Image (cartoon, rainbow, N blue to C red; front, side, top):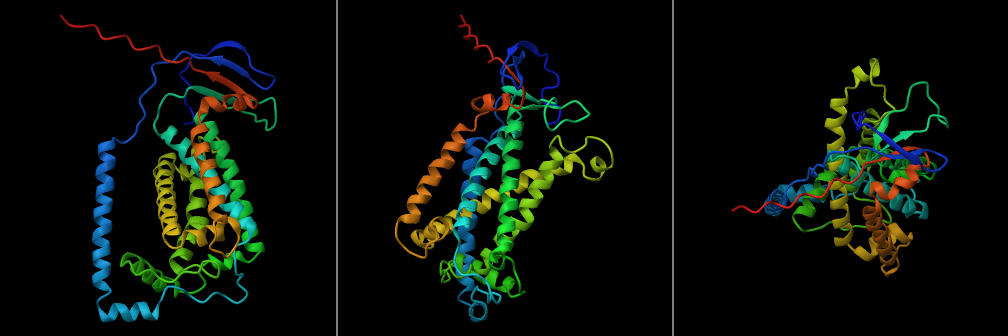
Length: 346
């Protein structure tokens, strides 16, 4: 990713604004996207459904055992909140929730493009005559890598603001475990969900302990891990020296992609449970900061989904090339020549 496009022989064409230079470089035919085949995806989906069905059958059988029912009765799924824990979800948390989802959608979109190893349609080089200036020459990046890094920076800023507000308002008491009872209560919640005998929920007052553990893992474990490995793969990290040896790039790559898969799995399960456990009330909690069961939260949610879909569609490198060109030198690659028609055989 550091030297992407280093072998391109650039041919300057003309200036592109006062902030950078736009030019084209010769290219080879665009490589195919490295995506899983539909057949393999179908097999994986079918396998997941079968495993889920087996888990449901096992959970329902376990619930017939007196010892398991006694365990569920002793640990219904909620640990007592600490003294002074706030009740309700403030408006700022709803906005943070939306922006976090918005940036994650763009990160996944650009990350998949980068992982496909397709030839970038353009290359970007930072303008070293402007701030920030460095002694060494800036490295050239594929336009998809540039977009990924820009969105990543915005996601990190949003996350830092979220953590500050979390501790400033006491909302951290709702997602940070403060008792070891959270472990058996979480097991009980998962067992209740899988047995299709779902626990009573009121997220306006408190999350169940499975939610507490999952939210804690996302905010304080997965997110920092994504940032750290992303920094290691970015041009910010030195290519040589002690830091490069202590944290090898191969290790960062091996961790960064599974972290993205964890975010995708969490998002899928989160959305399914939100919609299946009282959609109108849950959406009001998160999007309208109201403990109600009307359609206000759903309307806001629908608008946010349209925004996420629009972001996914518009997050195409060439559509954002003009913005990239304002902050550095942008070099476009000409489209590959059209394929020649097959010669008929005699």
